[in-house]
Length: 67
Image 1: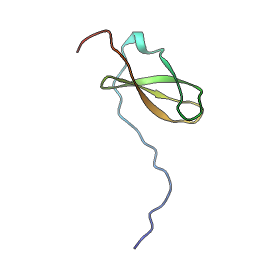
Image 2: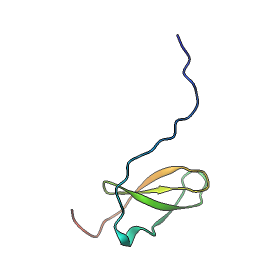
Image 3: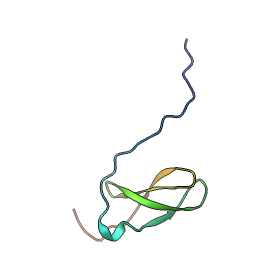
């Protein structure tokens, strides 16, 4: 049985563009607590990336418009 490498692969999630009013959204990083900026959206969640530790995470958001 082969042992697989423990090297982490960089995870790229496909995000859709954020509407202009949400491009300045910030959220607290769940790992290091720093402010993370929005990089896009995935369905109805805003996707953020922490520049400090490079974690990518999503947050739910109540959207003011309907699809």
